Length: 304
Image (cartoon, rainbow, N blue to C red):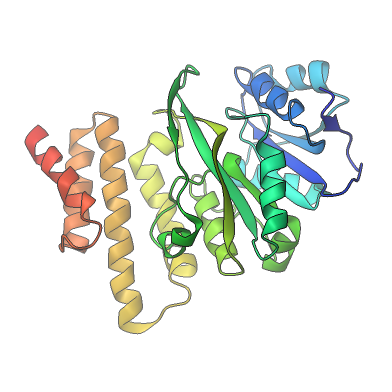
């Protein structure tokens, strides 16, 4: 674990790594070990969000002097990451979910690219998609940063927290971190608010190991759809008025209903799949908006 520094140590281009964890005994070692393999030393803040398994003991016994461990009552990943942000001292802040991991060159690549793009508020990487059992599924190229806006208006295009490094100064100018009302779409919410302050840049290599899981809140179409609705009006549409706002509201709802349809299909929930398909079409029936919706709906109709 030689790559992890103590809280408060400073260095040029200092980085704080923020790791929220809840009942992460299966994964936390791989996450922390992947940080230790980075060439760049970092302050590491782990927030134990009320774990009931042996997570806390693993961290304390095996990594205790090498990380800053903060314990709090369970409040969700947004609250945990915000706790980490308050403890951060680095010029840059990188997020790592406890069930994900990094390739050894991840931090160095992101710092290099951010230094080359001083106007950028943050950087994200390509993804190495992993099964829940840790089997490599495929590598996923990141969205072109020139296309990130306006795509963030209607979805988060595969930019999870574990792939992102932000300038702490950009967060300070924004006046806040993750929206603690949300439990699932809080990252999308923050990226949307940040991109209004400046662009993102990218490391295209698959430097982030991202664990896919059909379980949990992200695999619940109803939860994720309802969570998205919490930020629709006061975040995604905050800069719009009148007819333009009304039309965009329907477009965004139609796309998120489509995403919920796909999640329900993955879960084998045919009833929810049909309900969200119907909602997507009724909100925006034109095939010229996100035409992939209609190709997918054909599959739904054939299956049901």
